Image 1 (spheres, helix red, strand yellow):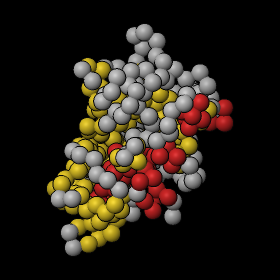
Image 2 (cartoon, one colour):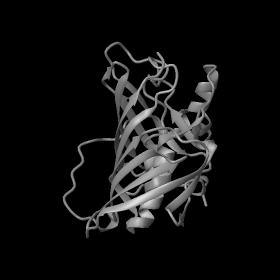
Image 3 (tube, rainbow, N blue to C red):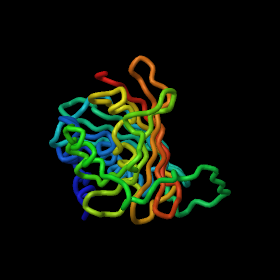
Length: 265
């Protein structure tokens, strides 16, 4: 079992499902949003009987802490193609995260396909530089969660120093640090695994997520994922971040958008 699978495991109990939040997925004192989403989705996959979270939206209400957490689920609409369901992460009698999702089996999908998007053209992972190394060289503390990923950026990455009028952007290769291959649930976590696009350019601290939506388009092939995330609009400390994840076969795996806020400038 991979570390990710172990740390997102859920158990059925009298109140629905329970899990244990592990602090090794923390950003500071708070768990990473993609990690929390994956815990809820693991319970929803079991509850719906459908393996693929095709479209999910999470609203982050208040950050939980490491330790036990309840996952309460509800089937909103059963269906032949899609099952719609909700989940709430509960800790200390407070709802911390609320998730709504549509679940299906992507291996059964058939229909027209046309893809005009293309994966970013960057050097291979062996010719890129590890984000942990770049962060350490800059004299910054590495968030604990970044030790769970192997994330590599091109040597000439503009991340942290965009040109005047350019979007804030980060592009790079990512995989789990333990070498385990991606799957549909980990693709959801990877959509929130890259550091904020504004970090180093505008934001100097925490950029918490308010809402995160991810669309899973295909199950990822083994190997590295290639991700690109960009922000075009920052207004009064609120920003959008649009993301794409591509697998080792050059297929689009997931599309994401999140709303976040800058807490320090």
